[in-house]
Length: 216
Image 1 (cartoon, rainbow, N blue to C red):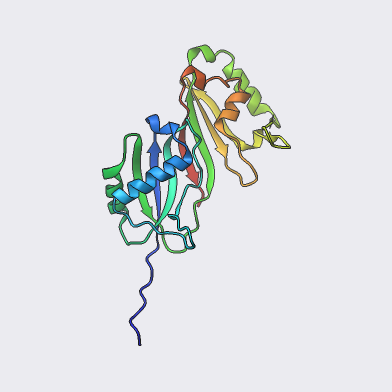
Image 2 (cartoon, rainbow, N blue to C red):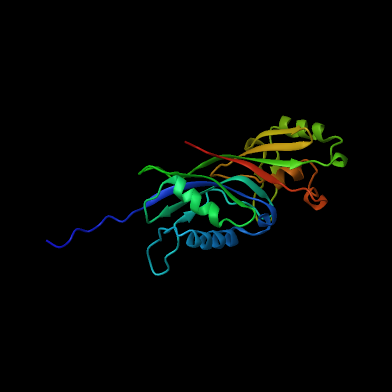
């Protein structure tokens, strides 16, 4: 009998991280390239896809738009070696550039389904000059049965209202929680536009995604 065939290690890991500062200005593809280089420097053996052009098994359940900071982002990857979450986190933190902070690394059990996002929360500090009448506009949006949002190159508008789970102004910060639905979703900038705050980022305000909820 020939030698035993070893089972290939396929360790699935869910990582929580922050993307802040100047890194908010890089796009999703650039972020993936940055992370691939970081994993190599951290001596983490990434699992690769099959075929003529293998790619790292690295996924983001909810990509972050350019210009928005992420305080608690989610990514999942597959490693071709067995490590603890603590060791993975230690290696990543040692190589992380400014603006990229790793919070946790969870080794997922065999058979665990891929992360499915239920909602995402965002925050935007509101300058005092933009606050007059804002509470009334928030109440009007929340009281509406529907709120169609037209999009370029889309044949039909999307209804923002059922996708808006929470919206409030607290201590000068606008907080919103948006449902992530496979049939459609809206972004925080579309909510800002509905509130008449389309030029908010032009005033120097930074949008933040404060939380990404993973469904069980």
